[in-house]
Length: 216
Image 1 (tube, rainbow, N blue to C red):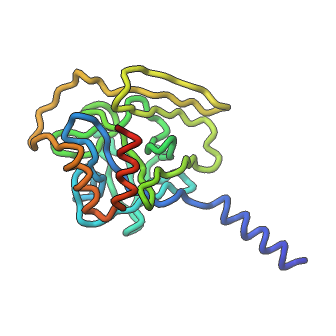
Image 2 (cartoon, rainbow, N blue to C red):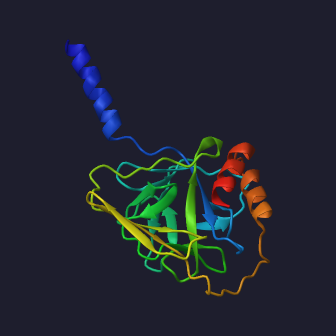
Image 3 (tube, rainbow, N blue to C red):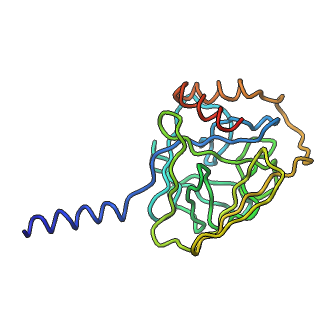
């Protein structure tokens, strides 16, 4: 009986402290150079582009975005860039409807002309997809005890802003301004080229094709 109780308590602790499913990150913004780009760390920051390394992320039970490959954590800096290091961010991350979110999100993520991933709208607005093994979307994950999170999902193909409320959590959908213009140092990347970049990082071909089919 005693051993069964210990086993039950251990199982409960694992369940309570569990992190999210591992996933890769991919930016989405139709008809832009930032569509289907891999998100990965470079020079201490998260950028969008193509890497030969398949970087995996998790959202921890405490709301940190952690890079599985080396255990480093993402943090939002005062200039809206996303730094990578040994310390997490006061702003917490989570996953909703297959998108990466953060708990003070109001304008979503964006990418600047140097391909840095930013929070806020100072660059070109993008959605950040969470792609699990096999190309499936990562399941929803909200860190334990976070019941008042406000979410905004950037939808690249919709012109309508919608919002819904469920219990204590508020969710909304916002479209990046389609009239926003940015000067780009690289030529536009087609969907096929962007997908190829992501696949070279080790993503599953059939799985990513399934994701693309859902998005197009």
